[in-house]
Image (cartoon, rainbow, N blue to C red; front, side, top):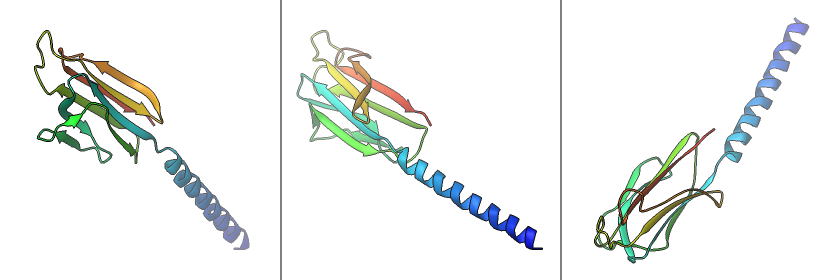
Length: 130
């Protein structure tokens, strides 16, 4: 009986240590994400994925201005990042201003596009892997 008790206690300690390590790894694996939009038109509208995985729309006045950023910490992985932007005026015309969408992870640029859909319209996606 003493051997069984010692064995059970050993398993409990091992399980506790493993669970604590997994909790620490989960908290360490959080990433800082920053979206950025730059346009020569001054203002833009579009949408992006928030830290909860929901789409947020900047679709009404006041529109966001060039240089806009949105930063958050991810809670889990994998996590799909997305942002799209359209210039305030004259998108899809030959003389439309360019718009650039950027995604940074832990302050490193990981994805970027400039007017990749049409002149004045851009989107970028990135998946954070485990």
